[in-house]
Length: 608
Ligand code: F6R
Image 1 (tube, rainbow, N blue to C red):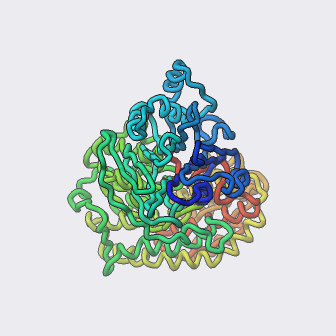
Image 2: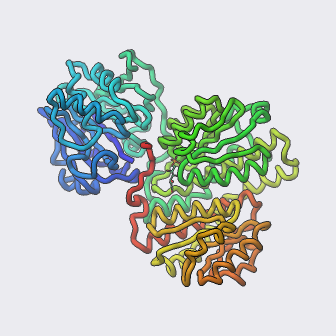
Image 3: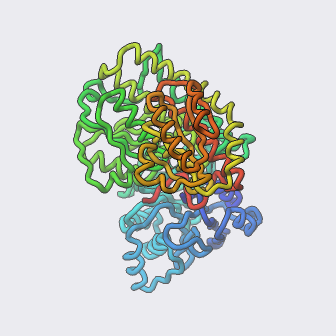
């Protein structure tokens, strides 16, 4: 979604703002802009389209001088992408400039109120209301004004504000949308995500909801809404900027696919000691695990697909009933929860608006929340009773790959840990699973080494219009993920079906040449999948069969085969997902798509 960068210091702000915005491009956007105090007034330059358009207008930043400024990449919500609707938005007099991520839900009422008092609006955005309110309430003190403004607005926001009345200050505040403050020497920063400022500082404050940061060249002071100082402890970022750079790959997605063995190893290894899974990071006791009456898994998109696998794994190993729900559905359907319910929330960014709201709803209803999160200190992590981090490192491509794979591993860890506490697994079965878990990074590496087979297959079919993914149980969950990955980055229409459901409707869509990716990795369901492959072949489909090395008989029914290493049923998804990721990647690459920043999509979905 939208990106924010702000700077106050002694260097020229505009080039720094452009560099920071470039690092946020991966989040998805349709326009960009900056506002800088040039020594006498605020200068605002904005443009629809790629950041390059803005950069060209500003001659790489040279055209706009000044040492305090804010910048923004906008992903349109209120009002179409246009120069006028881009941020920064300014107040009527041009004295206050605002950048905003999130949605001001009551902007219509506020706008009408201001219009009745003679304020003139120029854009269709909800953000302009914030800039206008700021000017309307301003009586000389920036913090007092911001406190007043946020007491009036409803919704979610991360805001950066500068003013020509106080060019020595840059203000920031957030609610339900991420915002960090970067600490430097004689210069300070704000950003909606760490990569934007990582080349400048590694020491950051994560702002809590409604904390107001006042940045000057001399330092940063944080206030609460009673205008009292809040003591903050800086957080040191220990990952390297190279982790957020392409490192020789053409796309972040390719790099992140190839990083999976390491990401998975980093996530698993510290949590296995002498053959035992040790989850030091969670406080859930054996008694609490025994008392769990039901587990809900709540997430969005690919993280939800991890949840579908998790349902099968948790039910199999713990014998506890598990429901998996889309966060956007869960939050509005009055789920039945109590203090013996465990809600497992899965999110790479830790900021997804629907997932965060579902988490809060679950807590309100008395449930205990355990989250699986990649971004340390994110809102979902902060609001959960327990957090298990996926150590995937920064994921930049919009389409998730390594975060998905590490989320699966954390699911295995939780399921095995709970099964051990509950006594639902024999010692031998537990030891075998733990051993298998440790072998996963090497097996993923083996799959990646065979990527040429998938590349060849993609080269044959990158022009097709429809693709079906079919599978049963775990393989159905993989079909959901394979289909989503393909459609989001290649824009090819695709459907995922539980293979047994085909004959209840969708098989009518299969005709001569329709491409079907059939996942048949599960031993006990292999024969059933062979029957489903025959059914679609009989109607003219071309079939890629994905199965394990032991099922060479797939060659008798499928047109193409891809083999993954043998593994236990619950861990096969970690191997089966890799060819699906590669397939989408190669197809999108051959079609010339903007792989890391697919149209209409954003990395971190911080609006509902
Ligand atoms: C798909 C994808 C999205 C995310 C979803 C949830 O490749 O990346 O479907 O999985 O938006 O995002 P997080 O995990 O950040 O909550």
